[in-house]
Length: 245
Image (cartoon, rainbow, N blue to C red):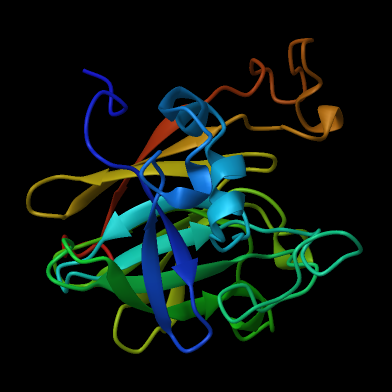
């Protein structure tokens, strides 16, 4: 069964006062009365523009928290606020948004309402470590049962760092770096064992963007090894504790 076979499609409008509305994308919406449902489902972004949805900074993953809140990663948008493109707004407050941000919202009526409340959980450019830099381009996201928010990156990093895996408190919003990938790789995909003492994450396309890193497609001879390959990494704590605690 396809997710397009049944149900009703909605798109979000983020209001500047921290509230939001879900707008129906169907032929029942007067603004789309001349459209067919097939056209709406194929040209969804155009339909969203017609009904006045908020243009976001490249949404990637969505994850639910035990609190009922939902987290959305917005990887980046270097066109934000430039000539002819969408200007800044409360939900996308950074012009030329190189490093992205994360938005958190909670639906009314236990996910069944037509409205929601929202906030910016983190602007990547404002989250810093002792060196004055932390992460950019949030992509993968997962929230554990203790409300820890795990974030994976794919793209531009402050200081030209490698992509990474981080964990943040859903209460204090404090971030800590857990893992750094190899050069040119995206850190993506996250799952844990039932006791949450072992975590699995993936490294995609190592060496991407700079052929000198991998010398692809030639065999890498520097250490006698093959060309870099995608892989799955297993993470445990030395003391055997819950990952991220």
